[in-house]
Length: 184
Image (cartoon, rainbow, N blue to C red; front, side, top):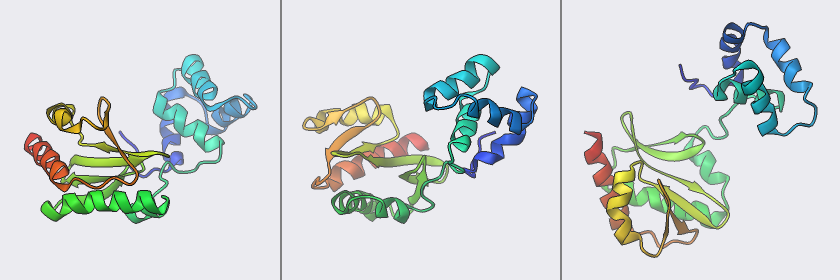
């Protein structure tokens, strides 16, 4: 079962049960790796003890001092963490979509703001140093709109726009309409 709380300690009972040792044992195993980097620590647990990625990540990050996988409780927290230009553009992107689809709920998932229709994610974004990645949550929708995205970098599941993007509300609303049709 997925851990929705974000609390890394909530994985501990399952780790103890599945891998047969108290959590103090596993914490010691990770600490004994000294200054090993994150991938080496996770790899150690996975290769030597059969840990799942989720359990290894929860334990390693806990030992490294991160008690929760949640960085943002609400979208406002995410926007507040951005530089002002990126925050302004990101807010305008969601406003453009929600002006046509006001029932979509703006939530934080995977530490990124996402629009959700009931249980289905419809649109999301993430912000990098030099661009904003937009995700219509569907490779089919992205393929359908790729001809209209000629000036942008299109990846497998996202496309990149500049931080100061002049928001194309019609494009975004059309993508969301196509994604909502898939969710029915």
